[in-house]
Length: 453
Image 1 (tube, rainbow, N blue to C red):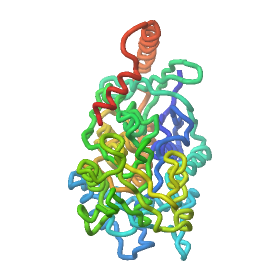
Image 2 (cartoon, rainbow, N blue to C red):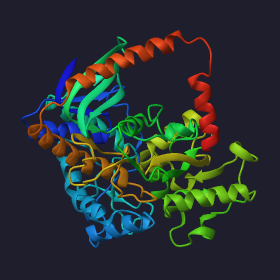
Image 3 (cartoon, rainbow, N blue to C red):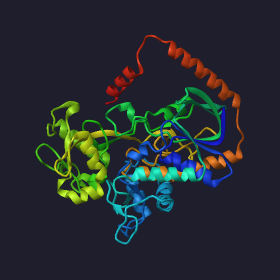
Image 4 (cartoon, rainbow, N blue to C red):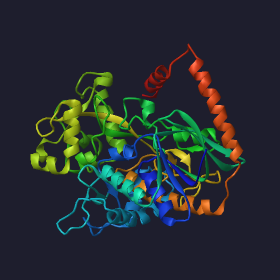
């Protein structure tokens, strides 16, 4: 049995920022539990940037404009109080990242550089070439080590144990040894990421994004909110779904059909390729369905992302990872050839229902949620590019604060319930290992992915 004051589950940007903040606040023991190496999470796949009204690229930008763009981009279904809180805190949270050591790209004056992104009325997306999420993740990991956060690497969440509306702890599987371990905690921050692998290979998400944290909360009686709002990124590689960042369009890339047309002229003549993700994804699927795609019909069809006019120097400086991925997975060099792309499941706007956006608390005492697994309702029906990284650092920070304050106030609750749950999982495992027939997990997964698409 293990025991911590604060247990953070998930090592993406939200989880690391929460663990870091809880430890920085002091007075509590903090552990970060992850089913992979800590820097291998989905945050590392986020290429484009992080939104905040720093006013470096446009002195007329403002928190109010960021607020309005986010509300409009959400199809007016976002929680406007939460969005106001989010946009007001984003600039300082970005400056904190700069202080921690994130190597942001710079403008000529040495300020954090900002570029245009879809749905934004000003260039407010801060970036580090096209590896923004990766450098944020590594920097936060360094800070977690600095502040003595204990890392439980390759531990898998089995169950969130709740009794009478109060957190008891969790049951986890240590993958290295196969041990099923009860973990007692005063506060848990769920930061387990999205559920894109429900679509199997038609997603930009890593293989770990299975929605297990959401499922654990649902099984514990915590509601999920807005699960129907799933975002499809317009530009996933046609064959694998791997993300071709919105930065590629922010830097001036074109979307081309089989007639050589920049077809976004028909759907969003003002914003063109920088229209919101839902609109661009719908436009691509319309072009394919109406016979203006490449590669035939069905799942093999695609349109093209053309970067050739940007020139070799700009692609190598601003979009190096885009080029690496296109060459590795499609054998296409974007300096010379257009990239085949098609919409790919990218982000879950819905998730674990957060009842207080200031602390990221859920309806269960001691349980908090942040990042893609949560639903604070700032994204509504459609998230703007660049708002995800901002989301995880803003609400990761406040979830860490909330969990630390909670752990100082409450005692460990019903430790016996966690021990009993661990014993029940031992019995379940023995039963599963003894089974000799019936459907396999892989066959169920494949049927689910086909049904979802």
